[in-house]
Image (cartoon, rainbow, N blue to C red; front, side, top):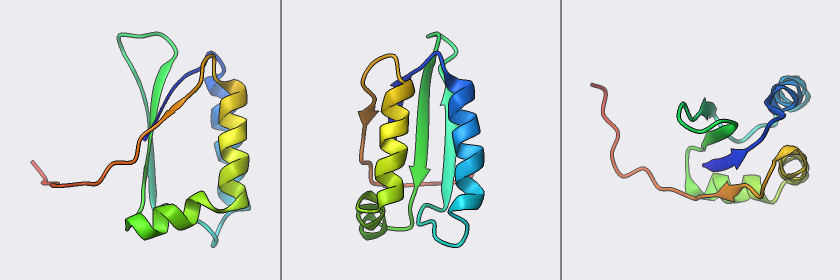
Length: 93
């Protein structure tokens, strides 16, 4: 999970739209969800989901991941916060 503040979210969307076809067939994450905080202007949370911790660590070592992290840092109003979370339970309600 990446928590970040940015007044340039449209640039994020454009970058992600260009990144998707560029990494087709070579992506490790299988899901990403971008959310916006309703109570804090320009606050976002990007949840990137991997099948396993090992795959997440492999993804961290890829050049494309470093490029993405550099891009994100450049559009952020302050330093993003990265969190590594393990899913303990998931249920459909």
